[in-house]
Image (cartoon, rainbow, N blue to C red; front, side, top):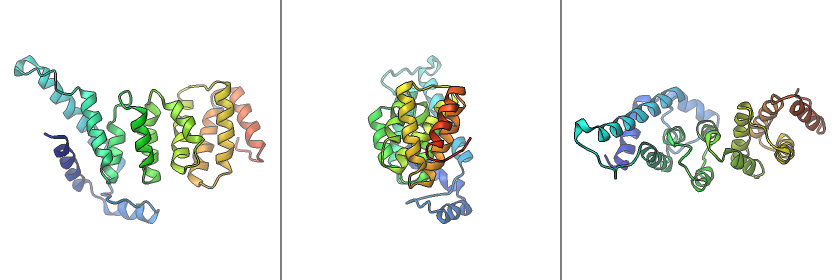
Length: 231
């Protein structure tokens, strides 16, 4: 099937996931999408796994000598998922963008593509899904996170602090320059205008403090400098 036909089939499958109560709840919270079927995250995760299995299965069939087919020009598993993710994210549909974040191979996507996706984030939910499903796994995750927390854009900061939280949770320790830059930006965010960013910055500080006693002391000292005691 052509990539556009695949996207069309995926979009049709969302009808079976439609949940009006979820849609209304999102609207009440100010999450307005051009098109939103209200599919829950577990159902979208199941759909993403189904798509991965279909892609893997079709690739194995092509390379299986029992089928007498072996076309090296056909896309690899990663490039197939890559192309599909690109096509899905272009759709102005909530579920398509979330699926794209779940399916994009993090070791294949270029920084330039991530920049484009980041600029096109429509809601806080999509920002968080990108951070959790994709951004934290990028080979250049830390570089992007530090770039984003220094931005004046809400969703950039939100993604940056969420990604750093995950990196700290995984035991990745910043160097001296990274520590100073991170703490400066975290303090700015904690005093900034965006509630979601303040929450994400606070969560990242807690994860930062869990890296060890030195980091805990640095976090305590930094927050006390703005009369905030969160530890």
